[in-house]
Structures are given as structure tokens and as C-alpha cells.
Length: 316
Image (cartoon, rainbow, N blue to C red; front, side, top):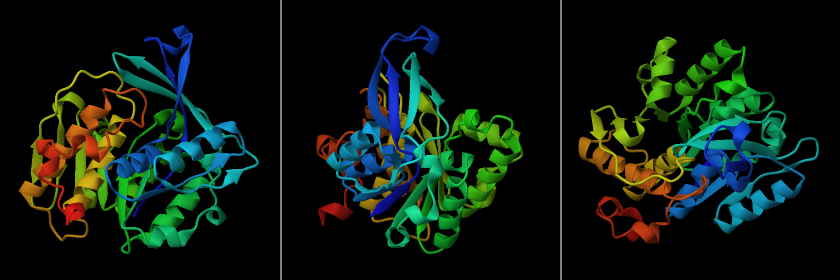
């Protein structure tokens, strides 16, 4: 089983294109990057779970029900002090921009909220940067990751949200560096890579087992110990790119799982290229649907060339 730990929330996605001050109506969708990855994994045939926290409110009810409907195991206590997280999303040319709200339940994740046995028995534990922006979730997450390091494969999507760190840029960079030290698999966008390099951080220097850099319509680059492989994008007409990076992340991990490559000492060039093609395909197809839970189910894509080449483990 693969376990995501982090935010689950409500995405209010604008129904009109333009700046938020001009938008008149929104559509409710479940979201939150680690939750998106957990749902994507489940749809791609990998048993998955989510560790998070929601408020004792109707939005919390909605999210828990939706996760269970997707086949995701939930280790998500209710918070009687804080409400479920919400985000407002504006779409400009199908590309999203976000306003995240503070003081919500997932930032109140405490060690006592987490069943550690679920994490230490996982094949992969996936996390992002958002929980690091506030306490007590920051200390809770780092405490968990330090205990797991060397025992469970750790997957990290950098997923920077600078708006959460206003006036605390140095803290954000410090925490990203610590997360990079702990991670075995690292995924980031090319803009995030440029930003980190501009601030003196080179992710490759932390020697992840696998690093993936996404570049939207320009495809992706996968870097392993053996080599680096550039993989072209799969062409579609995008409707909503919300969660496309999370779809890529889910497919990257699912590709490793179905190819029986988790825990292998070294990935060869052919494996990197095969997994990259699969991740690009899933990410592209996700942009043709609205909302962040837009990964296609495995049965919808199983006959596609990019899928047949890696679907080995589950077919045995």
C-alpha cells in the first residue's frame, strides 16, 4: 500500500475564466495535493491510503465520503477546533491559480492523530510541502519522516505555495532542503526547479533515487543514477490543468509499482523512459476533465501503448 500524508480540502473552481474578483460562481470539487495522489493511485490499480485531518463539519463529511467512494483508505480524524480546508481556484487559459486559507484542520495535525503503524508498513509514503508551512503539522510531518527514513521509500512533491510563507522565505527554503534530504523520490515543476536554483538549492545534490521535473506541454525529465531521460508530452486539448502535477505524481509511483521497480538499486534508461511516458499520458488525460480528481481509471487506458509496456506486476 502507498500512503499519502497531507492536506485534503475543497477546491472551489471558478466557472468563469478570469481573475477571482470578477468570478460570479464556483463549482465544488474535492482536492488537496496528497489526496489527489492517493485517489490517482487508487484509480491506477494501487492500494492507497490518506493520513490527514478534516473539520467536524459538512465539508469534512463530503471529503471522507468521496475518498471512500474512490477506494482510498482514510486515517483522518475530525478536528473540533478548526474547519475543513478550502481553496479558491481561478482558471486563466485552463491554468489554475490558487488562494489557500489558513487556520484549517490539516495544519492542526498532531502526532496523536497519526497511526504510525500504517506508515511504517507502507511500500511508499508520499508527502508535500504545504503541511510544513504551519505548526503543529510541520513538526508532526518531519517527526514521521525522520522515523521512516531508511525503512520506507519516501516520495516528495515540492509543490511550493509561497503565499503560505509570506515574510518567511528563509524558513520555506530551509524546510524544503530538509525534505529533500529525506526523500527518495522527488518531483517538481521546472518553475520550482528554477526558483530553488536561484536560491542556491540544487535538488540533484541531495542524490534522490529518482527525480522528475515536469514542464507542462514540453513534457518531463526523469533523472536516475544511471542517466537522465527527456520524455515528450502527450498532446491533448486541456480543459482544466488543476491537479495535473498530482496526476503525474500518482502515475509515476504507479508506474514504478506496476513495473516491479520499487526498491530496485538502479533504474535503467529504458525503465525511466517507459515510466515517464506513462506519467505524461496520465497527466495529459487528467487535464481534459474538470477538478483535481481527474486521473483516468486503469481499465480506461489499459489498451493504450504507453500502459501495456509497464503493466506487468498486477497481471501476474
